[in-house]
View 1 (cartoon, rainbow, N blue to C red):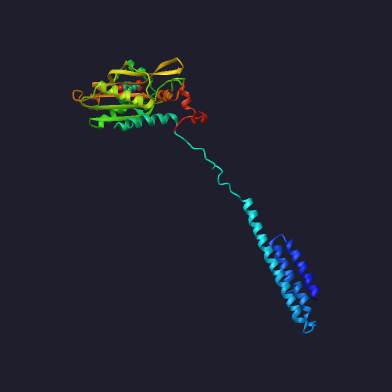
View 2: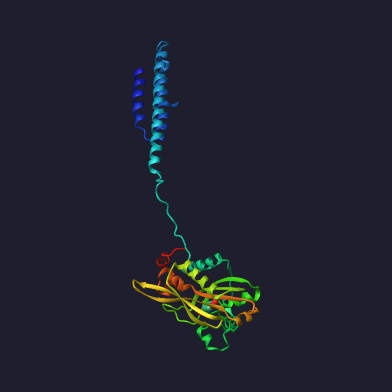
Length: 333
Ligand code: DAH
């Protein structure tokens, strides 16, 4: 019987050593140590032993049982450790791997330029206001001192609506609307979209953008206007060659235009007109209900597309209206 026990021990230890899983181990435990297991089967023959042999065999059986249990336990620990190592290897996370970024939207270069211009004037104490895009002839032309049916209106090829209104050809009508409802002194900045019956080409678009400014008060001079515009241009574009050129607008007297030198290639370039400006015409004050003897003012209207083209060196206005991401992604915003 002792030999049987010894054989059982040898077999159990070697089988347990080659167990591959915790399930295998459990099966082996039942097979060797279970109630109906091999150890019990051997011990079932104890009844045939003499009283002297029994305790000897009993002691051997206990030792065998303890050895098998110890071996099962050791193999369990080994398998568990192996499982953890395998899991660590297969689920390993590289914490240094860069994350995946979602593409980020950005502000369109045109809107960005318009915001920059507007913010600059807000920084100088101007109030931002807006007005309707569908305007009346009165606000767009008459109140701004365009004589009725005068060719000056042809300067603005106008898009008319069926109800007799028109799509505003500039942001200047907001000057009248604001003065009608506010007392001087005032400083306003009016960014917005304007419309003209122009065909789309490299330098024209039927829909474009302006930023209007208007300052009204006592003792406002042409010098204030020049100073304001010089500061504005320098802030937006940096120091660039610029010139003030006499011009004509019905709503200002005197009137001027500002040109910026645009270097298109080394040693090559041309002047680009970017804004119109002037001292508010007395008739405009009268339209708005102000006394031209008591207040003066200056006004200006900037072309946003042109300023954006100068800022970003874009030579075709149509590029500003594409939704081509490869183009748009080149700009800040
Ligand atoms: N409204 C003019 C245009 O669209 C631009 C302009 C010129 C606006 C002179 C002004 C100004 O306020 O004083 O061509």
